[in-house]
Length: 153
Image (cartoon, rainbow, N blue to C red; front, side):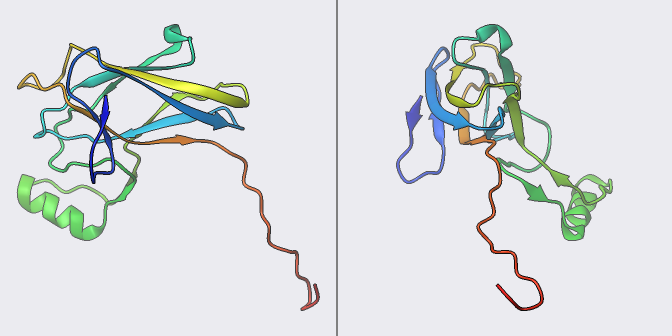
């Protein structure tokens, strides 16, 4: 897998390409956010954490939706109207996550997310390209705000 110049993703095009991404988690969860599309000829990867390949997940980037996405997106009423005009069907607005949880049972600490581009693909045209947008891990929220009561510090 190779990083791209002036782009916000990491891209793989050759089946069996591999990448390892170091990360740290405090709450035990890691998610992969990636591009999904019906028109870009996207393939699939198999991802696992550390040496626990038996707990891996297959991630399929091809889908049949009309839009290409790789992040959280709010489907506004305007989006629903456009969808209805294009496809003759109405979709209710919703919040959709285009990431996938790879693991949610990790021990706190440092880990390596590993992914391999698969030969098998769901893309009807036989595409294999895969684009990683981001890796998200869970950390506890720690507020630095001071508790203020009745106008006093």
